[in-house]
Length: 329
Image 1: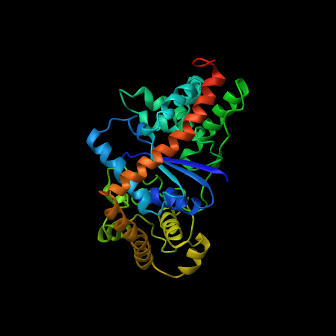
Image 2: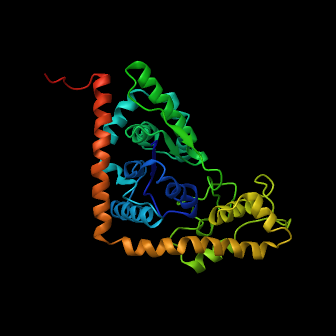
Image 3: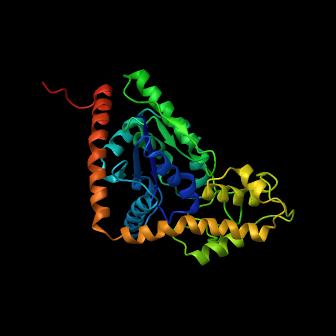
């Protein structure tokens, strides 16, 4: 059975884009693959975080994973900082990475642009991301299009290490879902839907109440053409809503387009809102049952135990290959 690794940062409330582009895909994959789902809290601190809010977000994210349908008996759910091998291998992979490679990362350019002081970790975290993946011998990493560059660097670092030392690491492949990989802002559909958008109308959060979801969808930016067709260049707003509806109802974009021939934007938006609410309501109910339970802690403890066993084996091989530590007689 092939192995999948994926991680999400606990840096804020999860969005509809996080669910459709990531978590929904995870649920569909967990029975067919050996899955490791990681709450990458060490990545979150590349930018300043309130410590109490960060701990709250970590727990909330874990509950949302489970509420979305992750089965802890099939998949391994754990917190990154509870598996020390991540940072240890992250340092080793940093020694294999070149400054020029890190400076070319588009996310570093975006997040550091215009700022006087930028954490060095914002530049150097891609090798930690590589370590996250390589520790579990992942064959596939499901990501949105915005993360493909980091996965390509992970592949480069793994191949470089294997050539220099030994064939320690599995080279991961990128898995991008066909529909819903990139959900855009409701107010600026040329930009990705973001947890940190200052405009609250731009983002649907997984824990938004139904009336709030409906209001946000109905106020989504569209165009004046009045025709529902998929054209991300000329009609980014309508194309984004079509993608959301297709992802929520398990339709193709062609099916959505055919179903809404001659339908106005008002009824279309209402149907999109209804579909989103129908998807998120049962998730929210399971979330509230789980968030303060002992069961959540038990699941995370068990996940950390399983992850540590696998990660420590890979770390030991990498350390031995590169010459770290002693060879005991």
